[in-house]
Length: 299
Image (cartoon, rainbow, N blue to C red; front, side):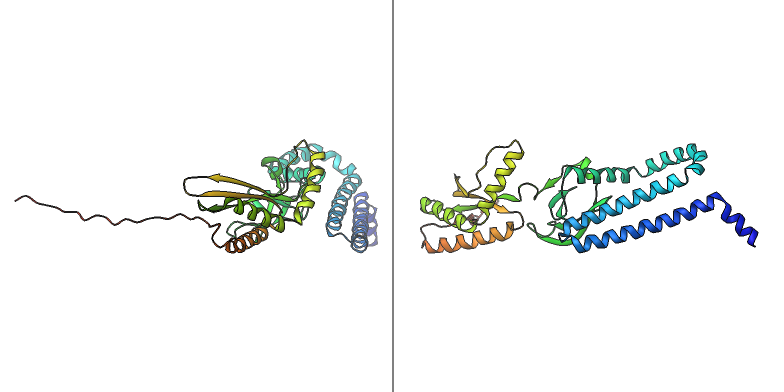
């Protein structure tokens, strides 16, 4: 028995296996200590999440390199077999490899980060996690109108960044331009209607406009884009049925529906105060009775 144990422990391969086990245990302990240090000293949740994922990724790379380096002598005779197997694995896992490349592009190219609202593969939502293979979204819209959560959590492969456009509602300019239209009857006081809409828009968007102006200036400095007006704008269009006023305004991307509700509420209050000087138009359909049809049959 003692001789058997001596031969077993004297085998170089067994010694390397034990060395690998010890090294991986130490690596796991170091990773756990690093995670605890991150949780205690980094307050920002987004930065903490990124650092944890980076620590895990570095741990995997170091572990693989340690195993391959330790067993390099034994792997020498398997080079051809591993090459053929590697080619097969790469073909079978091409989507996974593309997703990993997408993760690298997302991380280095700053496509988006946790907390951004994006559209990926036709799905709109807030990014709640970015893993090596998939991006997790809290979905907005679909059967729910406007930009509200519908409760579904969607995981999208990172390879989508190479296949389709990535729409980011947050990066560089976290505001949107939105519009509402108001049909006004012919014969109304159009000047009063325009002033009413302008006054309401300025009141409701007074907090967003200064921030949007400063953010847009930084975007103009970063990208080749023209200056754009962020103050509310009123335009008028006359058609066959009514005069249509369009209010264009800037709004925080998360407050789009709330802001539109406040605008309509205030506009309706102001219209009531005009006592009919400004009236909303609507489509009227007149149904005419069908005339009596007389049928005469010659005898």
